Amino acid sequence: MTSAPGGWDDAAVRSAGGHVLQSSAWAQIREAQGWRAEFHRIGEPLPVALVLWRALPGGLSIGYVPRGPIVRDESQLPEALDAIARLARERRAIFVKIDPELDPRVAEEPLRQAGLRRAADIQPVLATLELDLAPEEDILMAALEKDTRWSIRQAEKRGVTVRETSSDADLRSLYDLYAETGRRASFITRTWDYYRRMWGTLTAAGYARVRLAERDGNAVAGALVWRCGEREVYQSAATNEAGRSAYAAYALLWRCIIEARRSGARRFDFGGVPVDATRKDDPMYGPYLFKKGFGGTPRRFVGAHDAVPRELVYRAYAIAEPFYTSALRLAGRIRS
Image 1 (cartoon, one colour):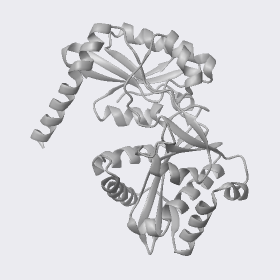
Image 2 (image 1 turned 90 degrees about the vertical axis):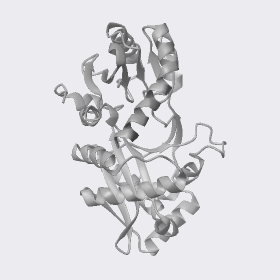
Image 3 (image 1 turned 180 degrees about the horizontal axis):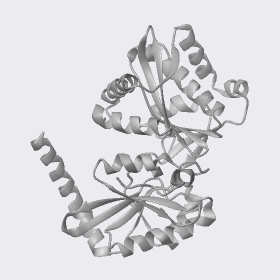
Image 4 (image 1 turned 90 degrees about the horizontal axis):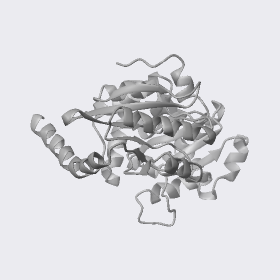
């Protein structure tokens, strides 16, 4: 495994704009899945960029900077983008993809000037709600929508309790809830082993917390939160039918918000919401209605962009990639 430089996580994760997907723990997770990690210090202590490399047939490669580069502020963005574009040329990569959590109004012009182009997204979240955690807890409670306050109180009346967890058994409870939610909501979930390794590595590193809502001794809802710089991010959540009838998700999310505030987070990020909140056909519309009851200000991200040093190879890859991916999936099914 590739070792991170000293102080890497202080800059890449714990700085104000940091992100878990730029951490040494995330590099460890992805290297175990076949990627090669490189840690690039563009400035001191910022900007930085964790680049994940994937080797392809014919000596080719692609690079990905998940939720990076990390910059102190918008003034550092041109320097960071120029460094990534230069890296793509030096490595003769097909492309290096970035998807920083930056506002389009800040990032679009520097991206254009650096020669990066809008590209296919890897991360599904392009918009979120962020709640300012400066107010006192009673003020935050009073600002909730009336139905949300009622639901939180109903959960308590119906015997729902929330606790922080870390054991493999508790992680498995979260996974079982997540898999059930995936079947109900028709989204794809991976294997237990995948989530056990990912969640376990991030919680052990101190970048993630898992909480379970329980009723009558049984887990009925669960949530995973990430600490990204000044934000606590509501990353994954799930509930079963017993949890839904007991309003457990409301009590759980409220607990996540309050614990984030108590631990020093300045903002709470509710995770994915529709880019267009009027689109009722958006798969994220239902979760959005739930989340907006807790407050928060809409925030947009600029989306994925590629640094492309070789145009013809890039176009050929765009044509061949779906067939290559399908072949890998078929080979995986045959081996299993």
